[in-house]
Length: 139
Length: 139
DNA sequence: TCAATAGTTTAGAATGGTTATAATGTAAAA
DNA sequence: TTTTACATTATAACCATTCTAAACTATTGA
Image 1 (cartoon, each protein chain N blue to C red):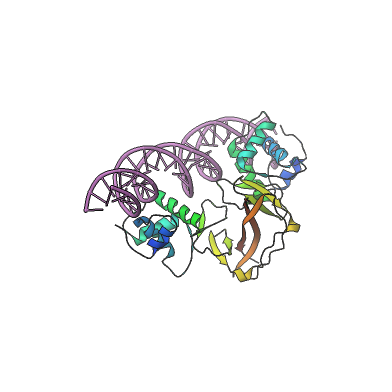
Image 2: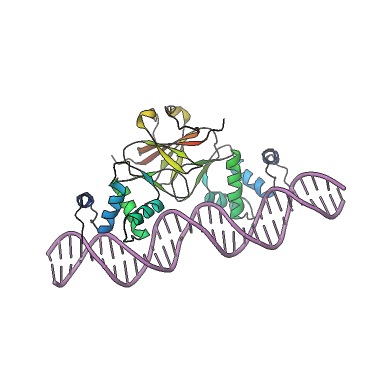
């Protein structure tokens, strides 16, 4: 039984079958006015809070990766013990507070555009990511 | 029995006991004119090639982390399945070729300095890292 | 020089995020 | 419908990393 929500079409357009699990995941990820950062664990928790029907961990991983491939979510390059994702897929950078393990959006206007004055033969630039690590200021 | 190499003093100065394992790791890491990138696995392999005496994986992890804390090596913020380190601790950024899983230094001169025009209350900036992901150019 | 002690190494086990597997289920096409 | 190809699921496997606790060793002070 398919819930014919707004996400059915979005999923279908990108070659993904609109199953009820994927629609549920869409709802949790995109059914909000704010974009947000998440780890898989946090997402699973959020899903289980909003539904009684449990979605398996494997499905969450598979779906998030599918969404990443389709560009619906972005992975944030931090070496942590787990992967961080972002539902805001527009080009922007991040603060990372290592003590709180907290990611904060860096407004595009607050970073001068980065210019890379060199290139690698045979390669083209796919993305430029800036991570600004912060720590408590005990001055 | 302590090998009184050039590293003994370096280790001692930073509060680390100059054990033969740490001196061996120093030799592999720093006994070259070129700096380089490595994963723990690659380092273990390099060590085992240059000595008959096996050093345990735990010791390599512990020592690399101690060196990181002391600033002898830097961790590079890439979300890969394993951590990358850099023996070049001067401030510089990186290309990352995801297909080859290859890190390439980005010359400081080739990147305009990044200016962050905002701050987080109570926090100070610890580092600013740029990762330029590249892919094959099949144009 | 030697014993005490404090830090270190080690093998192997444990951890934990992530991925693979293979059986069952379900959307889409005919 | 019936078929078929794709999805979901629970569970096992994987693998980088961390933990543990016993054996070891550099250092200190007598």
